[in-house]
Length: 356
Image 1 (cartoon, one colour):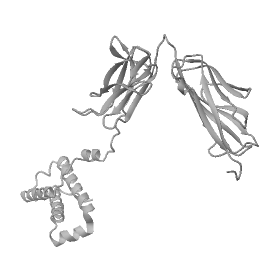
Image 2: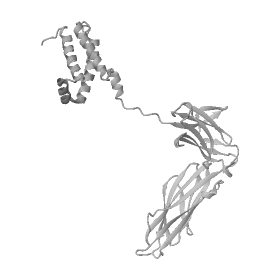
Image 3: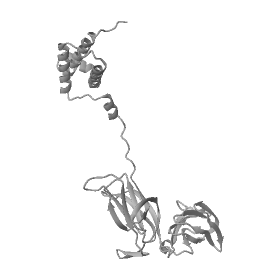
Image 4: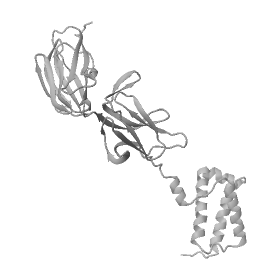
């Protein structure tokens, strides 16, 4: 194996730099032919390789600086022409960072905490009583000097925003004191303050919600449970006389307190006969049909609990064409501050073949 001498290294470097220069300057015939063969992509790769070779050879070989004056001049000329192309070389470390995939920004968040002696604590809390202070903590929200990008909306059970706070730091703490009374007059309406509240992180641009924390507010002196029921037909189209069908019940206790001795009832619709009940989800209800009424009951339904039950029927063979309605009702021994959502109606159409 033949070893290159020290004097050979500048000679080869000078040759490589001379050929590189002719490619970059390119007005001559040789430059044009190489450009047509190699292409712009090859030139770019060659420029990066030349820059890497220059920086690496300068750091690894102590003898390279002792080149003759002509080689230095060639190197200087080569460097000048490289810079005149508008390209600049960076280190391998800088190149590697340039191709790293972008890092995802942390998710914005908001959560509620207890307040002690007028100050936020690190104790998470989502159940409060009227008159109590609530702490909300925001993390990883974007910031902008002079014009906040996020605000905190404190919203009551009926959807009215009670307080807003701009987000100007990350993280940020803010507090809201709940109303002391059961009701408050808002926009001419007497609104119940008991139930599910929220502290949401919203965009100041379009008011879209980016994060939200729910919390329950109650009055120990006046226990209340807001029960809700929705009634849906299980049929996606008309049903035939003699066909099976049913009604899907969605029920919930939106709080603020536990509902005791809960009953969900539905009278058997006309031209139908009761078949069975199926509980689909939630705390277990006991269902029975007596005297044409299906009654599903549970001893207690906690605040926030939801259940779904399907009541199955059979359409009478002689049922006339038309609409059959069903009504579901929910009640309990606990005071319900909003009884208007305790009843729901659903309909199904019965139509025999060829019927009009």
